[in-house]
Image (tube, rainbow, N blue to C red; front, side):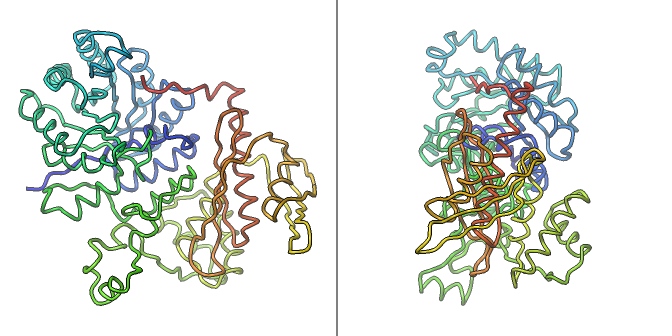
Length: 517
């Protein structure tokens, strides 16, 4: 009989802690809406005690998102639990996830307390968290490197205290699948009250084994897996949600387990996260990489043409990769465009639809063929962004083999129009340097990435940039059939995020983050 495995998505908490992957509140809400569309079971929306911004993001997600359980992380401390409890209060269903380290390494060098003190604190804080919700998850940080008999003892104690989920993390990615599976089996067989809680696992990828360890845990009785879209997270990342979901779906007879995930939303989720964070997946990444369903070998091509199952164990459609051509063009109306947006999962306000439609009509005049990927990029570029204080009004660049690249730019900054001309090593460099000349942000460009959204010479170019200021990274995204315009849009998008952060920091909204202890 098939079991249902709960998917606990921690993209917005552990994933966001990955360097360069921080998100503002609106971006977190956008990702949370997509996770709900995928039907993940639990969304770990953030670590409310970390900053006012984190608290507000968890609170906003709890207020808006329906369907998944909304979870807030808390150390095994009353102040953390109070903050998490307040953040998840508006949720349709809320969970507090409290944790404390249990390995001797952490007890000796970090917490500097005894096993007995850890057990007492864990029990006390689980009971305290039950004041806010009946859904309490307990994590034994660095569980795999803990004494396994002591781990069983603390699991039993927190379940008696009211924990409904017990999480067994491989916090530093040290385990091997056979070992990790054996640990889950030991807990299932030796903890007398384990039937009163769900066993969860949270595996890191330091040895490239996070997904393998998670699957081994499922085979040995785990009922929940903690994972992230694209596998983002601390250091080498977390278990990749899309790989776990498709492994269970593809090998259902072996695992006798399945998830409730709408797998056709996987590719859209991956691309959305890449757009927001600026962190692209490598081409050979399983499930969502650009080459995941590509065949170059003549033997492979011949086999796939005759029968796809010769070299494909899942279909591109099953993860939402099908490149569906829109029956829309420059003569299409607003109603048809709005209907297609809804089919793609974008519920926009009237103002956002108007902006997106205007951009669509402009794009339709430039491109013969318009694909869903073009629409996704258009929405990301025009809609999912902050209210801009810096707006590009005019851009002209002259470049060639015998002239110095020169950009003339007109911009609106806080309502005031400014026009400047500048030069650079190339057309893009000239454009970005002239923008900086107008804005005077003092930031440093640290990354510039270009990729085509679809094939062909008329494809839209998608540009992602990173700028750095005061130790903080800001990611900008832009798309256009003109790569210089796309570059300018991406750079200005990053600058607007920089302005947004500085203004909110002054207002006390975004204080320095405190990472989990």
